[in-house]
Length: 227
Ligand code: 5RP
Ligand code: CA
Ligand code: ZN
Image (cartoon, rainbow, N blue to C red):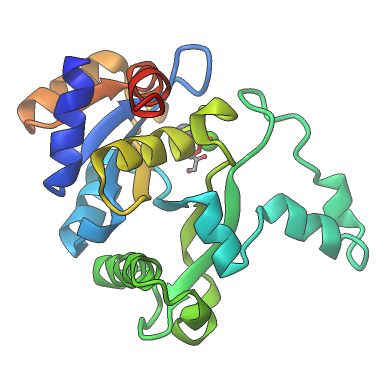
């Protein structure tokens, strides 16, 4: 578990960790940070050196306290009024049963919500609010739609779903950082996912831990959950 242990230490220090899901899944590497440590510099690194979608993963318990469901459930209810939404039902995701997308938010004190300092502020304030158990302040502090995508972790985390959402939250639980992560897919210059070789090169050049999701899943299920 050497690499997992390095990832734990890096996450605790507020560093970015690179997590690959699986050859049989998306076959993507996401940059991951514990949300409580986010800075505008993290957002800059995510958008310039990763380039995917910047999303914040939230524990199912916290989602329940905030009152936010999966987006698919919101669309299902809204389809009574807007039937086209039913026709868009995501029953054909090629790599998983269900997407973890929930709503998007901006902190009310941001302007457009997209600049590095705006997105960082939104994530930082959301992490603080949940950490301080101020869930009832969600609506007074944030507006939706916004520019930070919230992802809802599945109940039981990697026992039930093994996406970056659950893998990054599991790593955060193991590390003891507040379990809310912010992630972004690493894209290559060819427009596809960054290859494993180039990901390894990036990790080495930038002194970042590069870890396989499977190793985190094994550690979480066989070491952490058995403690
Ligand atoms: C949001 C995504 C990414 O793949 C992200 O890694 C979260 O999704 P998953 O849990 O399915 O891996 O779709 O940009
Ligand atoms: Ca995905
Ligand atoms: Zn993913």
